[in-house]
Amino acid sequence: MSKDIKYLGEVFERAAEDFGDKLALKKEDTQYTYRQLKAAVIKVKNYLLSLGLKKGDKFAVFGENRPEWAIGYLGIVRAGLVVVPVDRLLSEAEILHILRESDAKGVISSENYLDKIEAVQHELRTIKHVIPMNTLHKLPEKKDVPVEGIDPDSLAVLLFTSGTTGTSKAVMLSHNNILENLKSVDGLIEVTEKDTLVSIIPMHHTFEGTAGFVLPLYKGAAIYYPPSLKPKDLLATMKEAQVTCLIAVPLLFEKFLGAVHRKVAAAPLPTKVLFGAISGIGSVVTFLRKPLFARVRKEMGLGNLRIACAGGAALTEKVAKGLKLLAIPIIQGYGLTETAPVISVSPLEKPKVASVGVTVPGVEVKIHNPDENGIGEIIVRGPNIMLGYYKNQKATDEILKDGWLYTGDLGWLDDEGYIYITGRKKSLIVTQTGKNIYPEELEEKIIKSQWVSEVLAIPRIDPETKKERICALVFPDYELLEQYSIARDITLSEDDVNSIIKDVIHEVNEDLPDYKKITEFEIREEEFPKTTTKKIKRHLFIEKGMRV
Image (cartoon, rainbow, N blue to C red; front, top):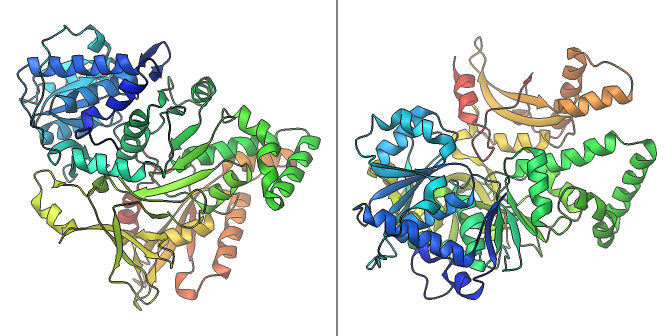
């Protein structure tokens, strides 16, 4: 990282100097070169300061992924203010909570969501300024006011954790937290000025913020924003961008593989046979994967893809192997909002499918209080560790101890320093005999089945015996089941689907010790509710499952 960059708002300065006329941001007909981006950011900075805002004041940014979101964010931090990214999908009550708790003085909002802001504004005394994103380019020119004396260790971004209710926490990240993490991932997630990216993960999410927004702008890459995340719009944008670097949540890669297999399943018999033959050859002769599946990647808008990075949730072994077969170079990262966010990255040259990779430079990881299998809580130390939780010293003290951040994730390290996640401390199931059961381990085994789309393993209390049982909540792959029935000209009944899933559970149980065996399962007819990064909201089902 350039020694001249000390503050988050200046992250694109080198690119603006070196690649001024190069495309920086684009969404449909709206685009900015790096020179235009710099001018737009400075214009927003000067306007905000003309409103009488002072260093350290909070200002929110709210809306869909688009160039104006980026410009608003950068203009806020460049003015020495603190940016508060808000999830556009939140309810009015949740938005009210964030804006109230953050003490935001104003918000730069997409015109598409102004009604949500207007609905809560009358309850907020602090909100004095609401600036629609589509007016940023029309803001009046104001006198350029240099911003001096920003402490690199001062608060830059206030990020509210998912599940925003009265109990949510606001993570305080400094300029240094994010820039140091950027320095750590630079080179591990290789991005250059020749790369193009498509922004898919919501920009308020810290993984997208660092890896899919700040990093590309620092390196001089181009970021494209699709009109929507509908498959048609996303595919068209990926083809337009000729995307070379794709950063997304695992669910997107899973759906990509599903689309490939559905297309093959609906194809004539010779195509199915050919695909099967190519897959067999590719699984054995690895160097042939790229030429054999070149057409498949091109049709999915990934013909120029050089590297893909999964983050925000766990990448299953099934998806990782499927992408590897198609010669899509996939790496995955692990991190938390509290760590700005990246803790580890899987090396592209030596990935281990079951691992989330090795610790990034400048960051330390230890396993706290490991059991006989070496599994314990993952704790982290480094310059990327948050300042704390905003106005919540008690919660800060619970997670930050002697410079170490206690992640709440359980895992272990192998001899080469690779990190393996076994589950969340809060979701750990402890049997009456003191045995530990990691539900994520069971889910990983079940999800390997082609018939299973989503699954949760949760504890249930038998109302009669009061003993704990392991229940699997399963959302089957109904599309695959439908194609299976069409191909065989049969109709699958509810009992048939239950029988298929029962066989899956039985097969999984065969390889498990008695105390880990799944004793019951339930079929779901719809997907699980998820966060914006497509993590299943486990707590909704744990609480329900534990009720006696």
